[in-house]
Length: 408
Image (cartoon, helix red, strand yellow):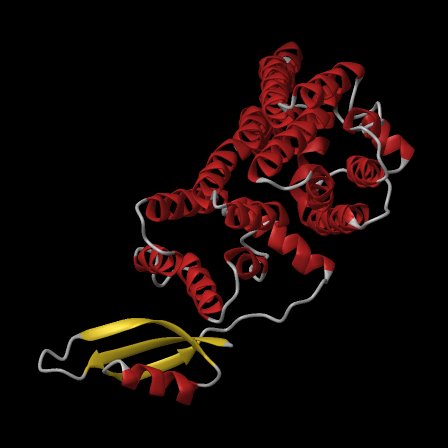
């Protein structure tokens, strides 16, 4: 089934212009379908898609697109939940959401979902064919919501989940942006003064027969190295980035493990953030009606750390063989004694999903506080580094003046 974008006019006295997208086996089939509803096609183009593949670079691109589209997905889930709660059937809800997104990537995705639903697929199965938009966790929750008749509440939970998902990443990016700008500014000052101002001072000293200060010469050498070395550094940075991407892809493969050194250096704040994502995801899945074993296996591929992924897969297998949830989650690097005790209490009380949700929020708050403390220390440190850079360059500019004054 191929998606076609069309422009047509109504075969009526009004001759109203209409545009949209429709799926069909061929262009002729789409034209015939449009003629049957009173539309005369004046332009028809195939919407180019892509073939499914598991190439690492494409999988990385899909993950990147899903992260970028978190806001759009949250808005879409919220809109669909509202439309379905108002009493509209699923197809009509998709049509209504499509009208406001026509001509966009979200509109093309919704057109594909609509056509798959017309072919008899469930919403979850249709979403699974759009990996650049939807994660397996979302697919599992939607399918469970459809089976249990709680689809609107599941969609609302997904919308809330995506609104929260980017908060920690945005906070960390905000904490790093200001120091990065100060660093770039400091290097720009060093390069400008060491390549524009200091050489003139050195020439004046040499004409006067005065040897230039060693600090001034060193600052000039550093500035020239930065000025002429950054084009050569770009390929190295590109090579380093490619290597990091390939290493990340390798670590995301099933069965792969982080090297022991990298695992020890993995920041604690990131462990809390990853664990918060897992506990919140488990809470959403359990609340949607997904069994614990299936929920763990759905979440495992999305885990960003191979150790956590292996822990979830192993826990699912142990629970399947009769172990309790707290006993199955035995990796102390991720689940400490306090977390396991809370899980045990939640399972005994029958409120495991609610407890996991509270635990996820608590871990998010803990990670956010750690990022705030990091930012509070990093910003003054960046200011001190910038002051040291500017002060060194200023001293390198002042020393030649003193030497020149002594010469006369």
